Length: 254
Image (tube, rainbow, N blue to C red; front, side, top):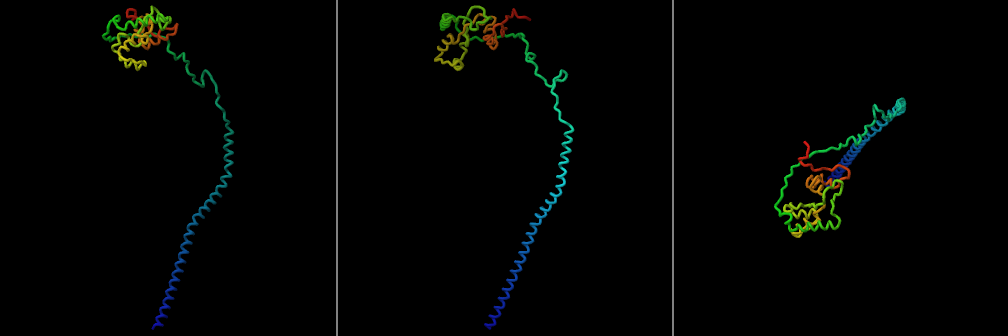
């Protein structure tokens, strides 16, 4: 029995081995066939694309040959209509350009413009001018200006009239008690240690200038004409009309 079993088992093993080899060969054959079919499918579109491109290229050759003829025709049509630049002419009937009007035509003619002012001044309490404890500084400044040959109107033009007078240029004497010294310091770059310093400055040359009667309190007076117009009088050009002048109600026209 041992020998029979051995022979039987060997025979079975050979059969199994043969079956495995056959299965392996079949699998390999099927795998190779599948791979070949896949490769064939991948290359087929590329081949068709190449064939299509060749066909299109061949079809385009006749059109390319005809292109020069079309270009020639277009050039000929252009040559038949020569380009002409528009003439640049100036005629009275139809000028080519519109020139700006002269500045003289646009200027406003000289004219007079009347203005009526009713000014209400608010005067705070203050001592009489002559009783001011700093009035002597005012008189000293006047005397010094006379000694230095400066006792004449600061404007000194053909509109001047009357004797020279001292004008408080920044702060009017009657308004001193309504003025903030700190604001004066900031505006004029000054420094006051106390109110006494401020009061003294108000009567000093820093707050005084010489004006004639006409430019001080009369026809062209700084006390009579609005500031913007009077400042133009300060730089008035000789021989021209004054920027403004004061006309009393009794002399004003209708």
